[in-house]
Image (cartoon, rainbow, N blue to C red; front, side, top):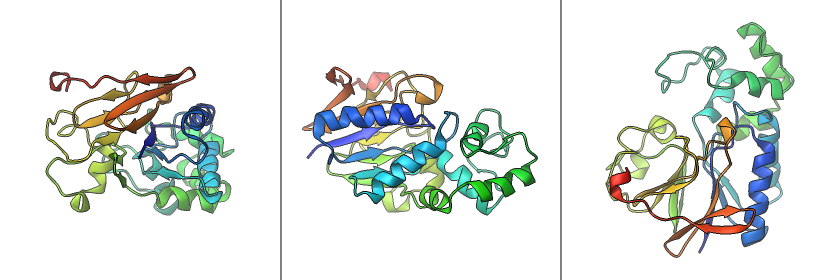
Length: 245
């Protein structure tokens, strides 16, 4: 049974629809596609990305979308306007942090991101469809498939999946990226932007850096192999050695 996976999207609707087309050409329009999260922020059309995935799910597409750390920001802003994500070492609010991309997300909903925070919240409550907020807030934290465990950032090694902390699942780097532990299933993740998908003995990073002008990775996992999907078809990925961790 094959599994397709797509990396961090970050408001790049055109790249997302192109990635879907690469999957459809390889596996048909009913292919199972897992998205590792971070639908919003930084790119120009977060609203379009959320609507596209929401509509696809409503239309019965075989799509799974796991929750990324960025996917928490907008729903929390609407529900708890003063909330600051505990995963942010800066302690800055989503709308104040210069690197998180809140301004692009708000602008995609027709909101002037330069407004004072209280006014921003009122405008967001008016402009963001409730269905979008509910969709982002209800995304699952992980998806377990016979080929892999799909999660946004990674897992805490040695902790049972049922006991994993949400903050780890959407934020972890240290302790996971450098781990040589056998996690059982291959862990497919994003969150840490690289130049293209890379396959290690215990994990597969599919965040190609679409948020920074690089490609949106789409891969297919089957029979102990991983292929990157390109406009010209499949390109096999070579598994990195443990020394590359």
